[in-house]
Length: 505
Image 1 (cartoon, one colour):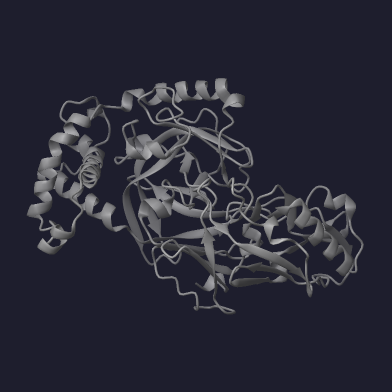
Image 2 (cartoon, rainbow, N blue to C red):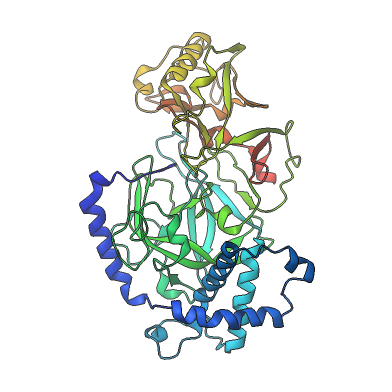
């Protein structure tokens, strides 16, 4: 979907009201825990030593002992300790809340063992996978999102979130929900979870929010209340929390449970939410995304046909066998760093071929500018690809010249900027020129079903180009990624892809 900064001058009064309401609703849940956290650091460190998890002599010798490193290490210990302090409190206001040990009445030492395990997880990362389905769409136009199925809380409550590589925040609708969009799968109920924690402004993860009640753009509250806006005008406002996430494999062969992932409990959510989602799972480069929080060095997805209902998987930190059920050669292209936009995955698009003609589009049309604008991103949260106006016009004119069908101007104005009327036998599809995207070091030869779609309109048949004109940012959408196994190598900064039968992975 693509994150965008909040236009504060347009939303000042509204956002201030939202923040005050949200803060008021959860103020009673917050307890100051800094002092207790620091008191437990020594005991937690002792537990790590008793468990045999202290570094070896060689590791200790090579460990960074600079003042900055020591401060960061103590901060990490404090963050882990803080996340479990509610287990150790006696007679606190939280006594009425469900115990975070799920009623197991853990001893203090058992709690410290649990905290030590979490610290070890935070250093090493965690692999996981989850089921992904294409979302529904209306009016016969396959413009939708892909939904990743997760569960949040203890016991787990199911959520289905848009898999969005263009943003980083993970959020879902939560009770109470004063302004929410209606879904068959109701809002998450934090009161039913024994592992739910509201994060205060002192939590380091809150610093990763551009607009919050803490940090640079703040309203002076102690609760970490966020405002997060998207390029399509959608917006969510709520509080940032920590919870246990459950990832279940698409084939039902296993699951992984990961504690203390930061996510947004959305209380005021409105905009374009039409794919049966309960929220959005950010898979972007930002610190709040699932790949970043899981500390994985890669992730991959393989979207099934958007017009079908077959599931596929998203793999986080798991070996992605790009050659399994592949229908071509694996190709790779570098991910381009944009220091002005640290959430999106930028690519180096060099040109476009329609039919057998390489269009005369300057490479600078797709290039990232020095001021951080322009460029090309791959975004699973956008439906159909958009091109800058000048590039789109050349693509439009090339298809118009090469497709031997009349342009359907009435349909083109509302669905796609370029549609053609045709009359052929039932289920047959008219011939169209091929479409190829040229990247640095890689070529994506799109199959017909990844750039054209058909539907019935007023008794006639129409075929449309699933590409539209946009601003100076080129966006490779999910429609162009169907049955394409895409691997994001976050260590080597490479994107690899290969045509595949995604329902078989």
